[in-house]
Length: 191
Image (cartoon, rainbow, N blue to C red):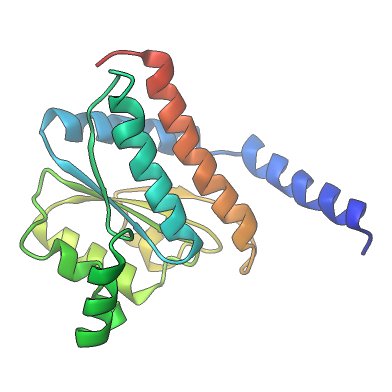
């Protein structure tokens, strides 16, 4: 395949996904973030691989990015950011526990989980969201492909409907979700 043809094909797929974005899901996520702030809850963001980078970026944007502009003060924590904690849990009791153990006996009903997973089936993600459900916390899923367990178990799901394996497109859309939400609050400009 020619480089230019590939680039045009990829950007065409991305444009189609943008044209079909789930505006209702994004609006519901914004409402839940505002509700969580009013209840003084914590927003925990988590993901693996590229999705962990999105989780970190989202935590940065929604926390310090808005606070330094005197717009919002969300309490956002990325559970993907502490490599000593992640490697200790992983080494001692298994990788499936890296998010669950960070939430155990800390997560409250007024808190929310934003779980980012292309497949929606990562065992460490599903274990964390299963725990969140027992606590009574809301779960926002960001998924791709068929959405997996995360899509089924989420209270709100931002789903990117793509063929299995289209990681780039799904991760692009998840990052765009972050920037849409962040930019909405910037435009709103109120604390």
